[in-house]
Image (spheres, helix red, strand yellow):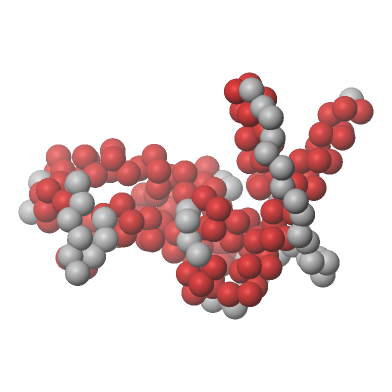
Length: 188
């Protein structure tokens, strides 16, 4: 099934070698793709490299893009795999949150104003950066990139149950890190 997206004309112009079209696609997708790479790797210089490599691969492989999804979805997959490859090469084995306790907690809706919300978002981002690489990758892919546990298992070559367990552990660890940071702030 062929999918027609809003940027298909620009993609076709790229296939014809029109330089302006390449820049248009880059401008349309670079910020979002950089953010994906940054969330997954946690390192700006690596995210920048992954972004450039991903666009280079996408532009040189446009003949492989079959319009079965949007160009953005296809490019996102390239970025995710390149980020995962970086993490995999960096660590011979991913580190995961270690915990044998099963965690099931009630979640309540926070009551924040915009300033409090911005502070809380930053605390969450900071806590996510502190997670072991494997847990951080699963959390990012599931929560921020919208992959399901089956897809994550396939990307990371792990069992689906491992993805689910690590996601729950990562969520709990983020909550713990935020609470501990809050306790530290109150003591200071």
